[in-house]
Amino acid sequence: MQFGTAATITRVGRDYRPYRWRLDALLSASIKGGPDGTEIVQQSHDIRIDVPYALNGKVRLQPGIFFDRTINSGYFGLGNASKAVTDANGEVGRRYQFKHQELRARLNLRSPIAQDFSVAYGVQIRYLNPHSYEGSKLEEDAEARTDDGAPLIYGLRPLDIGILSGGLIYDTRDDEIYPTRGAYDLVGVRLAGATPTSSDVYWGGFNFILRRYARLGGPFVLAGRLFGDFMAGHVPFYDLSQGGGFIAVDLPGGPQGIRGVPNGRYSGLVKMVGNVELRGWLLNFKIAGEKFKVGPDVFFDMGRVWNSYSFNDPADGDGPGLKFGVGGGVHVLWGTAALFRVELAYSPDASAANPGFPIGIYVADSVMF
Image (cartoon, one colour):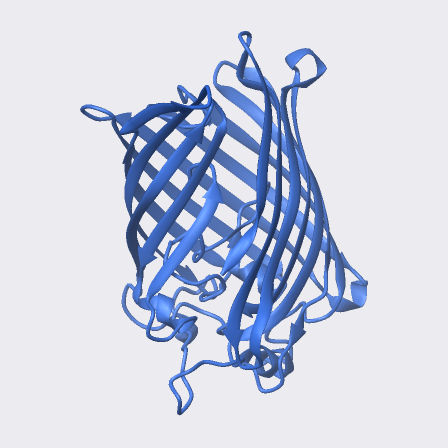
């Protein structure tokens, strides 16, 4: 059971699209039964601000502060063929879990350079303090060494991490909150390093995100996205299941990747995800003078990871190895800028986190893409 509070405060104006400024805040926690009984397993708290027309419209400012603490974060090993083996009772227990705690501050900026084009640049500062469970897959991999004596994975210790990002944006969407036509593409690079330097954690990354929107008959919109992320260096193990330079998201699993695939289920240096979604507004009404729109969505997500750039790594298995999720949900728009979604997704991989229940349930703000 998840509970908490989400708030969106938006200052709108006739001459400001999509808004003059917006503040989003979230306080969230969840309770779930586990090996040690009922526990508070996840906490997620953040404050995000978006000012599209700062400095007389020359810069878009997007600062944010985030705190996450999770006692059942997923780690199943490296590669697209990583296994999830249940115990004699059909449970996974703590075998594929670890404790994750992160405090993160970011500042993303965006400056227009030509019609439909902008440059993006940003900085992130992170403090992370992960812990492995005794007998877990993470504990095993943290002690393992490769053939040349190097650690198999990095990052199982407290670290301070700094990340610098830069990129180019192409944006022709008709609306940022709920686009119905146009494109929104991003190409970005990032460089990261950690202290203490004895951790030997440093890496670089390149990613692209291509999004397209087309209005169909009636109220329906067809949306598609292709997301690729490529990393090199000594990447901490928790970032091997994430992607993106300016706003890191769980990838390939989770609510921003292949819905239905658990967060952290697959890890690797290379990740590719494709999504197709059909959505549309079916209800339009007012409550206490406030405007609301409600509409469904159905989707299909697919992708995979590669542990290394050899592309014949035994950790990735044989064959295409594609992972998928399929499902649907509902979007709710309150006013012009506060959009929330609830979605359910089926994936064969969902049972890796919840044996016997191959469904992922997601509650989030804004459209996925």
